[in-house]
Amino acid sequence: MSIHINPSILSCDFADLRGELAAIANADMAHVDVMDNHFVPNLTFGPPVVERIRDVSPIPLDAHLMIADADRHAPVYAELGCASVSFHVEASAAPVRLAREIRRLGARASLALRPATPIEPYIDLLGEFDQILIMTVEPGFGGQSFLDVCLPKITRTRKAISASGLDIQLQVDGGVSAKTVERVVEAGANVLVAGSAVYGAESPGAAIDELRALATA
Ligand code: DX5
Ligand code: ZN
Image (cartoon, rainbow, N blue to C red; front, side, top):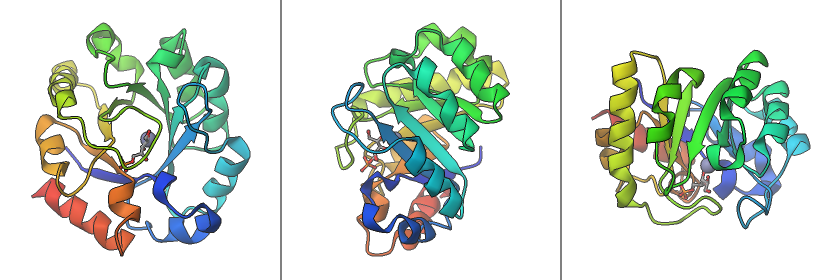
């Protein structure tokens, strides 16, 4: 199981996106949090800004869409070149159809679950997705505390992925830091998102290296 470190630019200096992206060039992908003030009580940016982030980023983009009506709005992020597009199952009326559309547009389709959303209804559908994203905080803000109560869901999801024999990534987002990363990996996650732990550090590059070392130890 290969470990991927995807820093969230939510905690970066938005006045210097180019420089902040350059600072995480040793990561696997840049995690881009799109919020619409409806699905979550916070607002970030939309397609025009993500398009410029794509232009200047040294690494591929991992879009995390925290937006209502994902069926309508998610495909544009695949069209503009995000390598992976995560949409929330709570915001999609037809997650299988949407995942197929994202794949048809050339991106990896990822299903995101809020902390209270169970994985069980989606286990038979795993083959429709390239990744499952389990939130370990309520989505909306960086810097929140990791919710340990989500660990059993990570374990159950990893077991289901292993049983399926499919090549599906398991991403965890929210409160991942040097303090929590070992628990997260032990539970079965292999794609680790970290916002404040990376951009709050003196050197984002060194923080990425440290998380990778802890996760692969
Ligand atoms: C929260 C976002 C996360 C956030 C993580 O809703 O989806 O990606 O940036 O921030 P930390 O790592 O600080 O919890
Ligand atoms: Zn996120």
